[in-house]
Image 1 (cartoon, rainbow, N blue to C red):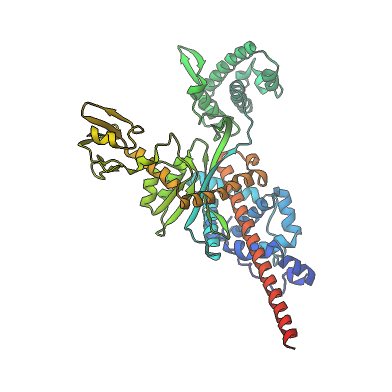
Image 2: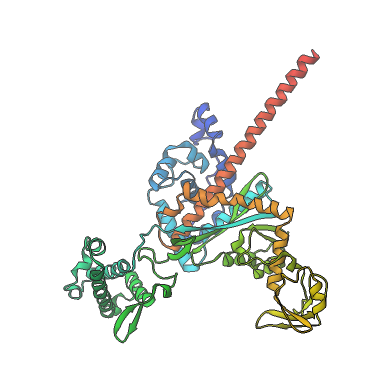
Length: 545
């Protein structure tokens, strides 16, 4: 299938179906969301980005226009439609056709397989190159919208959310049985029936529930040992034929992650020694485990960056990874790729804050504002300790006293300083200071990290900081919105790549909805202003008459 640009975006004055409709229909469509979607969102889509998904041979059958595919998949998430409902809407609803610029087409350029084939091309390209074209396009569109609405990239806020996989949560025995059963079915398909002699239970659809739900604990242990031994036999006997098979790899991975061998006998590892990145369900091998706020999650984690001002907020950047990735890694990566010269205010919660992140942000001209700090809070007065930038030795204490001796120990990342005992006794913070008294001196051991934390706490007490902290609450609506309206925890896809692509379109739909609402409100205000002006003209006319 060859790539071809969509040249039919302008209305055909002769064949355009929209121009032949009634004035009433035209008025309804032009006052709906479709006009704003076409003019601002659809017209901004970069078709050339997706040229790499198709052949360069112009003699082959042309592709469905890439901008139509991107636009229609955003509409799918915007209205929470299935693929079948989406196809029906595009074929039968003139608003969808207007929004996608297809009113001049004799027949809509979509079929029931168009969406799945396009998604498969995106997944295949990602797996080959590691490039997420949907993420690139959504962020490009967000930058275009910021330019259109003059939304400056100087105020940003960041938050993360856990995204559940749609796979079933399995206990350890069920996980072993499922993996062995999947490989047994592959062996049955390959024709090696002799390996399954006496092991036909793995091919039974009902045995899984009977084995899990209706057996006592001691019986389950016996079944587990048999299941592991059968699995080891399957792996050994099919190593040559099925070593590249997905189910073979899943079973091999499971045994490596959860078993240890004492002699020849397999033994389960302690649950505490099993990695959170281990296999949770063979139907979604990429899903990982995380426990947060006493709740366990199997799936992924998303990090969202929102650019905002008083009138509008848009999601301008995002990441989607296994849920073993921390907030620290997300923000460090964001700062690392920041390439703008203008200063930026980035507001986050306390999970993103650390000394390394603050220093990196300062180098990139980003003013990082975290609403809390992790760990034990030091006393605010400790912020006035002064260190030498080169030697990292302590220069003076909060009262301005200089130490008699001071030495920095790199392996401890701390500075050991001795102060005059008489001067220390006169200090109002002496009782609160962590120090050790000697005969004539007082020893103070202090690190730059603790002083830095104290400086942050001191900053948090200012009025300016409290105003900024309140602005972060706006991004809390996005995780709730994704779960309630866009059903992010029950996406009909499994695997990191497919889920990530679907997630990107959901964020594109959130931006689209905000833009459409902004334009409608703007139009409403213009109409109200016109009415007000006309009313004033009439009043002046009667007063002067």
